[in-house]
Image (cartoon, rainbow, N blue to C red):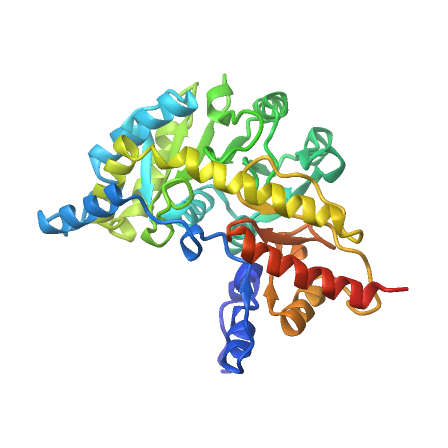
Length: 401
């Protein structure tokens, strides 16, 4: 018998880190690389608040080095529920919460317990890649609904309605959005909830960037749900600057109580198979939620200035079409067609090789991402200026008439 890998391996393509090996090869040859591909504030001039670092140290010293409950430390789940009630107006209790090793694990958990073979999951297009990957891994079929670039990347509610079928298991919302930086209007979320209610579909709402908003107001999906089950996802990586600590959570908000216990029991069973999230990090997470708030306005202010700079520069470079992001820390400009690159992936590779700037190809974010690139807004302005100067030079060199 000829050896072969599992078929599911073929579904795993993570565009955000795809070209890092090539970037490292170029660095070994002496080329300077500016990394604008991974959304990690800690790689730049942001740092985890000292009070959270101290809390981790204290947790280790005080002996909190054991396996915690599989669903998460009880005090942490209480703090998460309190934060959601206070900040996002979502009325949940600790019993509704499951702690995960980052939002990535939460995505895996949710799709593992919801998706069977041939089930359909409606995903925003473009989408954070893990939603498509895990839907396919568990035998489901990702169905992309359009987010309208001409309308600030808002979900096209009519497109969602047309794509709902008897096989639709869930609708995914990512708000504020990765990769586009869009912030969804309240009425759009309400319309999506109405569609879900009419068809008895669960809504999965990824809200990891909930407090990184530049204009407008973030509204949590679960706060608007009247008779629709919403599974919310959130975590500590972005707002609390704890990316490498790998701490996230999900919660189940079910106004009718028809699905809550079934979903949570399945999630608890799955969580037991990986034993627990890191116990000392969970203890630090309690302090983060209760006491680490002072850095957030400064975090948003710094990011807003960098957003403004990148947006202005891209508008000045005649070859880009771009929407101004209102949240998160990404911008998703459209690139022109050229004889020099046949698609956005080739654009990214050539830009890296020639100019040493690494961004992400938009087609790596699924449907409706083609002919775009995602740029992170995290570096200081001087680094962003250097990168954009190189991008502008690259564009002018290959698009001159």
